[in-house]
Image (cartoon, rainbow, N blue to C red; front, side, top):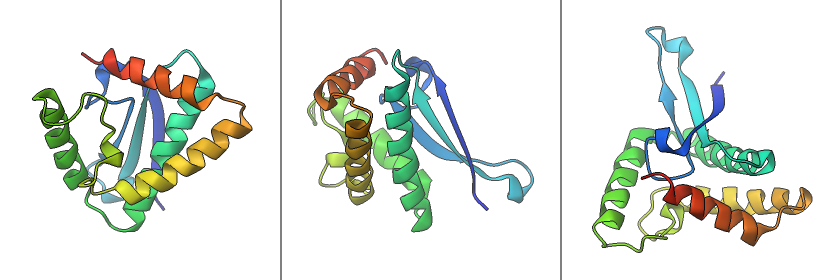
Length: 139
């Protein structure tokens, strides 16, 4: 069974300039391998929940396809570097890029995230602006 750990921490402590991240953590015992999802701390618990839900869905779909999450990390690092160098727009969303290796999983996760936001009566545009501003605080 896949173990999943979801937690929040300050945005500056995430591995990449983003509002969330996921990766495998492994102990010396192979059975203790777990998927770790980290979400930036936010003032609104609904926002944290929505981001965690998105990351959970996206990462689970990738794990289910046996995607090497290290390859995702490599792409994310390259994407961040290209964004910093001005080769990509500063507000570009990784999962929406044509060359993104997880764009289909990102699209599905976003659709579900939007449905849940509607159910929670979260204004999507307000939420999106909040996440953009939070990501800017990474530096």
